Amino acid sequence: MKWIKYLLAITGLLLIVVLSSSLAKAQNCSSKESCEKLIQEYEQKLTGLRDKKNTLSSQIQYMDTQIYLTTLRIQDTEQKIIRTEEEIGKLSGKIEGLNSSLDYLSKVLLRKITEGYKRREVPIVSYFLDSQNTSTLLSRIKYAKVAQENDSRIAFQVQQAKLNFEEQKDLREQKKAELDELKVKLDEQKSDLNGQKSSKQKLLTQTQNDERSYQNLLASARAEFAAIQGIVAGAGTEEKMRDVKKGDTIATVIPGSSCNSSGAHLHFIVQAGGSVTNPFNYLKSVDNSNCSGSSCGSGDGDPFNPSGNWDWPIPPTITYYQGYGETWAVRNSWVGQIYSSHNGIDIRGSSDTVSAVADGELYRGSYAVGCTLSYVKLKHKDSDTSTLYLHVYPQ
Image (cartoon, rainbow, N blue to C red; front, side, top):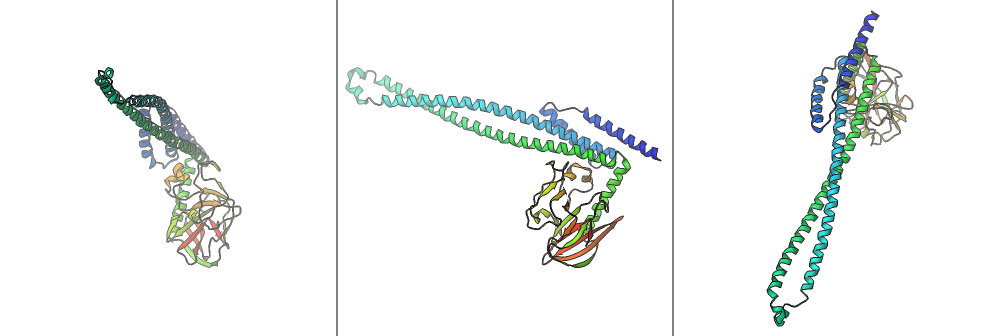
């Protein structure tokens, strides 16, 4: 039977190679229109593949399509950055020209105004008293009218040039703000691309390109998710152990793999008024190593932003594997087809000792789903808040 297993693995690997190479030869976008067309095309392909990831080859095809789509989006953003930088350059040149025109017109207007004042130095009555000047009175009045009209026209041009100058400056500032946003977006897209490539490599490493291993991985994750959902809903088997004080030892993290979990970790859940909520709203800031992204310390993982005053249930430094809500793993890995939102946080500490985060009643719990997932539950004293500690031995 071993040769059948090897044949299936080789067949799966060949299919993955074919799918990957076909995408590698796919067209790159060379213009705004081609980018938009290709992005729309591959968004539709990705939507069609989203619900068909029931085999390893289809999952890899989905990941390759996702990687290619992100690559297209990066190219599109890079082109937008180039166009925006060109627009800023043109606006800067136009502003410089407008500034020169405004400076020139302002000097002309100032000179005209000065000349006008000089003309007013000779009283008009003198033209009537001086017979030599009387004959030129009408022509001087006509000239003064023309000069006044020219002065008004220049003043209008100055005003228009000033308005245009301010409009172009505002537009340039707007384009600079757009450029900054595009650069941030580009960094995020590149981070997503690295994460997607890393997630694909992790899956290939986990499964060794073996379909049976992939199906076992999915089955285990589905079982764990079902168990956690059942525990949160109150369907676990629970019995009260004792009353505890804040800081008392209540459990120990199970070393190694446990029920539907491939590695030791504490899954910590906070319920307030019967609904799960973000544990970071309650836990205090602490030293940590963020391993929730493509790798430990990669910078693309889930936010680590505790803002409360609770001590942590395990001693720091905290190793952080997955956050609350729509996590990096949900967005970038195969677990996204198991659940869309993570209802707690996955962590480890400097030791496996688990402590109560508040005074309350401690319950021992378990939930059977092929195997038995053990946990403890702490009902906080004088509060509608409870905390759940999964993948632990009660103490």
